[in-house]
Each structure stands twice: as structure tokens, then as C-alpha cells.
Length: 260
Image 1 (tube, rainbow, N blue to C red):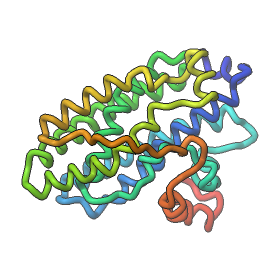
Image 2: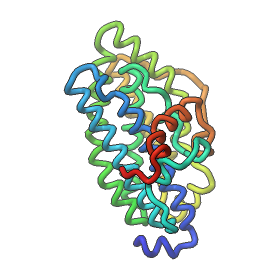
Image 3: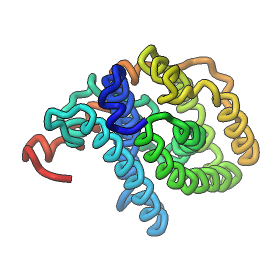
Image 4: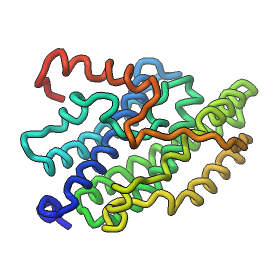
């Protein structure tokens, strides 16, 4: 399905909304990771985290640009990034949580990187050629991200008593935010049926098996907790997103029409 075909499709608005959601996931997490720049544990890691952040922000640009192309009416990628309020963002909640300590960031990255590995692999088969092309670029970046987060999980989990304790605490605090990423609403179901979107529930068991194997190798435990937090795809967020957007959007809203 070409971009032109998509524009003429009855489900164009669904595709725009879906693409913006994926852009929100990438932009918000990219901003969180970028908060490590100049604060990394050592120079090489500081640079590596900066590169990971740029990968996510670059992916958000591709997704927002595609959504803007479909929307028309002079909509731009900046409109999606800088001129929407908290309730209009539909990113997963796990992406907007505070940076935390290094163990917290690595744990979140491990959960998200394994998820993205399966998600982007599935998106490669999308009938929407533009989304499939974005996935093809993203999967290469994700392989690098996952290698890093896996190696750091093993190093910290099976490291000192303090690094082990911090990793386990991060896992316990983040676990309840992982359930949301495998769920979808009616909009995504329509696109799944059309062969455009990804059914994340189809690879949840594989994700869980991978996470369990990595955590076991790192001498860390999978939480036996049943709590779950949801709402990101509906525009209901934690208190942290508004602060993130205030900081991220300040310059553009102060100086309208500034360019990326």
C-alpha cells in the first residue's frame, strides 16, 4: 500500500492517529533518555545514551512527518511535537516516568527494547509501506539498544550488592507499567484487521520468556505483582508528562515557528 493509496483510504484518520501514537512513544522516551546527556556515569556511556536518545527522537520525526503528510492542511511534525497538550499525547506511561537512577533507566530500556524488537519486526510486514520502512530503520537501532540494555542488566544485576538491589527495586517499580504495552483499543484493532498495525498481544509470551531469561542470568527476580497501570493511549497520564512537555515545548512555544 503506497502513501497515495493510504491518503485515499477510508481509514486514513486511523492511520494518522496510530502513527502519531508511535511518534509519541518515541519522542517522550527519547526526551527522557536525553536527560542523561552530561550526567552519564562515564564519558563513553554519556555519549552512548545521547545516541540512543537521538535514535528515538529521529524515529519520532519520521512518524510525525508521515502523519503530517497524511493530514495535509499545512500540518507539520512540529505541530505534533510542540503544540499539543498532555491529554493529546497517547504514549505508553512507562516512557514518561522520570529518568530515575541508572538502574532505573537500564531496566526501562530492557523492557522497551525487547518489546521494540518484536514490535518493529512485526511492523516490517505492515501493508503500509511507509510504516514498514520506518520499522526497517528502527529495528537496526533496536538491536544495538537491546544489546546495551541486556549487557548492563547482566553487569548490574550480577554485580555488587548495591547494584543488584537497585536493579531489583527498579524492576519491582516498573513491572506494573509493562502490561499496558501489550493492549490495544478499537482503533488499533481496525488497523490490525487491515494488516497495517501490530497486535502486540501476539508476542507477549515471547517477550516475557526473554525477560525472564535475562533477569535469571542477572540473578534478578521477576516480580510476583498483580498491579497494573493504564491510560496512556487514552490520554490519561502520570503527573510527570506535564513537566516533561513544559520543558520540551518551552522554546518552541516561546519562539513560534522555530525549526528542529
